[in-house]
Length: 585
Image 1 (cartoon, rainbow, N blue to C red):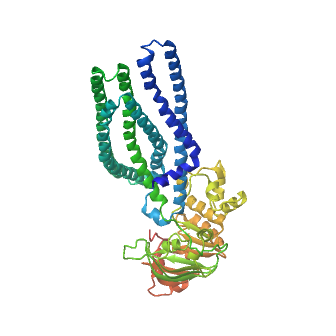
Image 2 (image 1 turned 60 degrees about the vertical axis):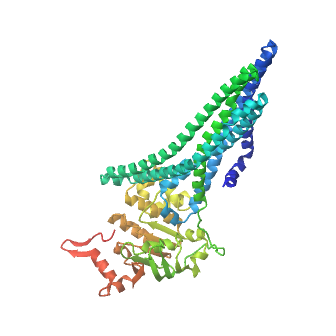
Image 3 (image 1 turned 120 degrees about the vertical axis):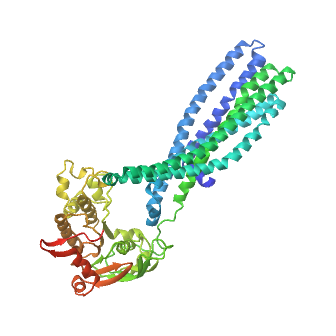
């Protein structure tokens, strides 16, 4: 892992070298003060060398000016190295997320993923910046102070250094517990982010059901866990800091008493004793700095571990022999396909199903919720992989078609519409990267949303809000349909594409969809059976199996047919006429 972390410095090696040079130079210049102090106390002041006192004062001032410049470079360029590394890691993790399969997002909450992209990477950035600097500065200061204090009086220096193992022992005892408590704190922060993301996204539902207290209760639970995790982290940190401060204070006591005894017995001069008192901080300060840095090290290591967990996830990949197909408009064949989202459960979502969608034809999937209709739609573009059986297009196994090529040929309109923050123009243009203004306008007209867009002051440049919050359900659906018009795919998947529309709008969109479906191979999932009466074939899917198939007329002739019962339950004659009622959620 250490070698892997170091690889992120490579693009910024020259800046990093400058940063490290300034770190070492900054430490080296700091040592000048006790050296000049000793020279003045032992020689220049007793011997009244006034000129040299002035000269050394000017030298020290010039050194501090240089130190100031180095400190500027240290802070600016050092932080920029960390920032660039953080940006590179964020780019890498975002690119990785774009390549991960649906199953990863099924099992990981958005808030927890966001925590890894933001707060975790910030900790890594701080470690990347301060870590090498701290090690370089403290190592240089320690080595030089060891040498310099020993040169003043070796015996006195050895007495002082004998306290060092106690600091090392305290660090070794506390570090492991502190690292584990840091991991717990990270997990608790990620959970809070997930809870907040969920609550904010669903704030309108919360208000509609007056469930603010319930959401607050959920948040308080996560917040309590965070406090408990931080309590453990700060407990170990406090023990370490208190113990190390006490030991370093002991250094000063030992230095004061031992040095006083040496001075009393004439084993050291007053100048050397004074210098020793001044210089002892150059030995204790880097030790304290190094020990305090261990907390940042723990946070950074924990953050990098969590970063690697995502980066090392298995991506969506193509088979080695997968080929690219520009046009896929042939027969769609499901052959003995079985699938389960969770293989630990006994029940399969799809159980050995087989059917064919002939080229240019429309097949509708109907049946109760949870029967497997949407799963069929997810397997075709390889959002998930079938456990058994084959799915073919143009007599080619979809696993042998390059993923990008496969999905380029499939257009999907779902019941749960997702729109991006931005304008109408940007959301429609998402259907085709190089679309012209003319094509975008044409797509909007076909989806019957053009007139509404043009009625707005900013037209296509109107902001639609986060996830299209400023639009009605029907407007969202028509906007998503416009994207598919623009994409102009050869295969269509309409998963409850008109479910959010009122009757008038549904009729307009249904007409447009009928036009779009001409000459294209289409799979339609519908609960409103009125929308699929003209399908070439209707498949009734229940409990992962196809229990009936045929066109509308054929299925309605079956005496006790499931489709017939479903259809009749939606269209009931009454004294008010024919009323369509909501059947299945």
